[in-house]
Length: 267
Ligand SMILES: NC(=O)c1ccc[n+]([C@@H]2O[C@H](COP(=O)([O-])OP(=O)(O)OC[C@H]3O[C@@H](n4cnc5c(N)ncnc54)[C@H](O)[C@@H]3O)[C@@H](O)[C@H]2O)c1
Image (cartoon, rainbow, N blue to C red; front, side, top):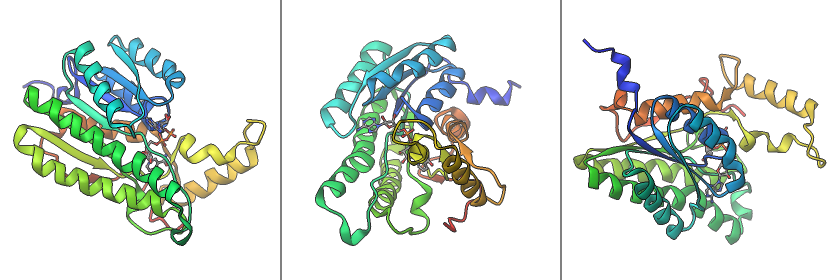
């Protein structure tokens, strides 16, 4: 019998990751590379990709940095074109790019609503569309779309974020039904509080230095959300994404997976 853990290997596969310059996206590129996949590392922040690319290459696989604004269909189409031209195919896609758009529902202006929908919903939708098209050409593949624990319970002031992330879950479940017959699996992750610039940006002073007291308070508060008394790190999400993109998850599709420290969102 072969080693059952071989199912997690992705040698010879081509993965494409959005949001690759930071946080969960950067960690996902690193983990995918460690499992043997070449990685297209995409982000709107081109300068931020250097570190991710270096870590992927250090694993002995190819990294292809791509500057892509996922809110623009033409950018996403071009990104998949680059992936196929440079690496021949696309086997695995993680649509991770996303951001918070705060505001009470009654106060939301059109700019905030549109920006939230464009990034968190349409960005993932475009990435899913082009991924399915590319994977149908080669007989299959796997996609992971990033939603959020914010879809589980309402929390005042993050409505755009929560409803766009809820829509990501349903678009992915629908796409999984449609693309399954072509060998394409599509799953969703709904991360709990994870320490990345997404969560820590408020903890920096105007001069750019870390407000240590605010950081410590935030850490304590975040740990208090979990019965384990810990807060998540990017690697916790990246390892789940790698599992879902690998053959280890060959029977998993159309599902929402939650790595959240058992948070009950009593914030
Ligand atoms: N960190 C958390 O606690 C947490 C919890 C639940 C869900 N999430 C989700 O996980 C995903 C990754 O978050 P993170 O914590 O790593 O955040 P992060 O801010 O560290 O990374 C987000 C990345 O997305 C990129 N990005 C933003 N707009 C883009 C665009 N238009 N086109 C391409 N790239 C763009 C940013 O440049 C950045 O590199 C997001 O979708 C977020 O909503 C995060």
